Image (cartoon, rainbow, N blue to C red; front, side, top):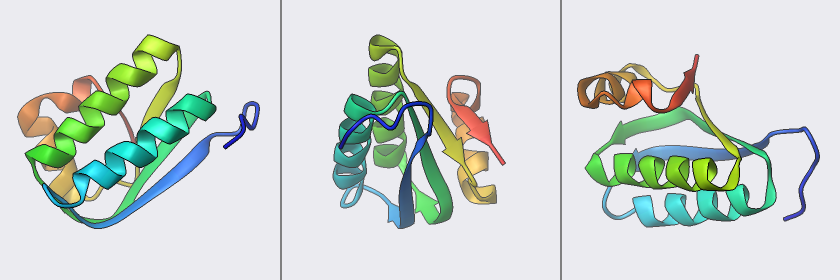
Length: 97
């Protein structure tokens, strides 16, 4: 991956983000944040997320903070937004409609 200047790089997730799938999401976000100034995680096709998914998001956000990059969550459905609010992570993560 090469830095595309000011254009955000989009990582698309779908289905369930859980103990089985969170590691691959984490790897995709790590790779994207190493090469791009802004990464948008498209969650519009995510139907479920558990604590492993939240952990992947927090680790990616921490990496973005350390490297001066930006991580934005886009298109999160009601269930994911509810989970972010219940855990207070909606205050820490940039969430866009």
